[in-house]
Image 1 (cartoon, rainbow, N blue to C red):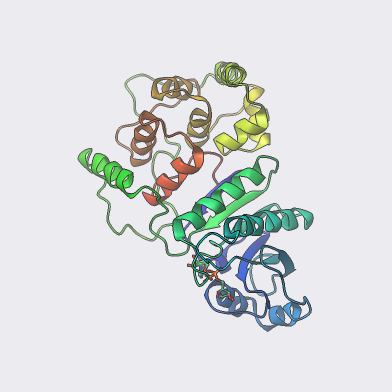
Image 2 (tube, rainbow, N blue to C red):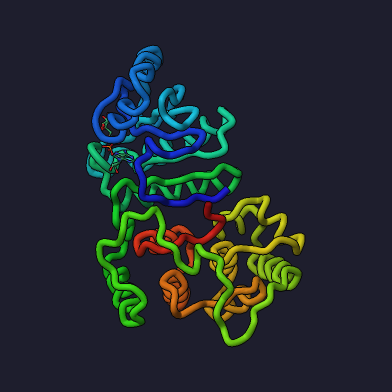
Length: 319
Ligand code: APR
């Protein structure tokens, strides 16, 4: 399954398992560790005391106790020490070991905080990059639903200059000034509210034509369905429906597939039309996606990080 990014408090997440950014003692601390322990209640510490600590990069599980989740996976991120001491490898292991443990526990949905991005001082944008890369790689072979919880964060942008340029471009189109937007998990926009597209011509979904176009493009790119799912941020089960020529896609799903397959904005538009949609110049999410596609930025992680930072809906099979 794909990943999504939300602004929330991880202790409120209604998923099978949440991941805690713990320390090697597993006996609690501040930050998200403190928040999880206080929300889960004293029984959590009692169980943690039986675990005998945890090595950096490793992961151990406990019950969720008073939290809405079934389990808590405690992982210990690296303390940033300049980058020359294997920090990136250790941080990536935190995500991968936690995801593997969640899979062993039979979990279908997992939420992560940004491990090591707080007290452990990992440079924030690198912490985001390693998180999204590690999660995306794992999801190439998994149907798990993964949420990255960006607690109280406005932006996950890497390239500030590009970001400012996009905001200027969007403001010029006067489709919503950017400032301190409301603390929504996600603002409604055309990408998330599948309203009928207001275009001069009626757009009709040609599911079979879409399936043929997808299959043809995959052959040209020599990619298999797993790689398509990873690039488009969709699940294998949705891909099965698409390739069978059945099922109405949402616009975020169709755009995720366009990001994965289209060679340029024109071909993305053609794919969109087969799915019964088109780019709308009056909606922020569409304008951002079109802007990025025009610049050749179609990597789903980059596109979604930008959409998240601009309070627009993400691409792919988002819930
Ligand atoms: N929900 C989601 N994310 C949160 C929450 C929350 N309730 N509270 C904090 N965060 C975010 C922080 O904003 C940061 O982005 O979690 C990320 C990780 O920050 P820390 O909690 O400081 O974790 P880390 O940097 O990995 O340091 C771990 O801090 O709390 C101690 O015991 C912990 O010693 C360990 C160290």
